[in-house]
Length: 266
Image 1 (tube, rainbow, N blue to C red):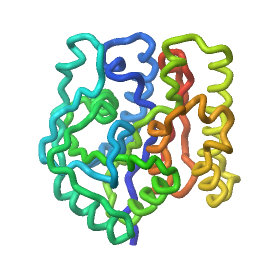
Image 2 (image 1 turned 90 degrees about the vertical axis):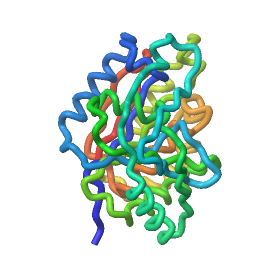
Image 3 (image 1 turned 60 degrees about the vertical axis):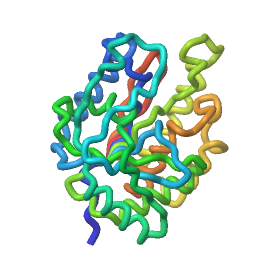
């Protein structure tokens, strides 16, 4: 019998620590994530896939009290004193390792790895008490879309009861377009976001076709490489979808730093 995740979310986590620094261009995102968290039952634990951690093989954090990794540069001093003392869950990490390996995917436990901003930025907004144990899951540095869907499918064989699974990325991640005007950028991104929303929420799409289009997003999505010159911020979605195996029940859209971005909830 499967012990499915309590909820699954793919979210757009914004630009670095800006959401925690009162940056006006991120306020709608902060309000959105706060509202989503308030609508959900409080989980016993969180499994978070971060776009900001890549390893040669998939890895999970195994420290009981991971520190924070301020993996951003050039921000105000207060960005480097943010705290989020959420506990880890080594026992859960070990159980994930065994279950995923049984499903045919190698998963390593990283006993010293801390939490990066792909974790502590959204979770400080959603669960500010920092009292829910968190295990963070890396991407594979090979950035193979099918591999990340398979990881999600392997996670579906794990005991994820009372667990909130979060894919922390950004559905638009052309960094140059955030800082320098690009002709037609908003129109290109809007078309990509519409494609993504239609694909991930469409109830009339067969799962084999949905999976095929998501895995082959580079050729099936409009303006794919404009919106994601490098795919690491999209791939947490592939893990979430592989785990869910069905359309998202809700899509939330807002503008972050002037660009339309999408969050999905299963």
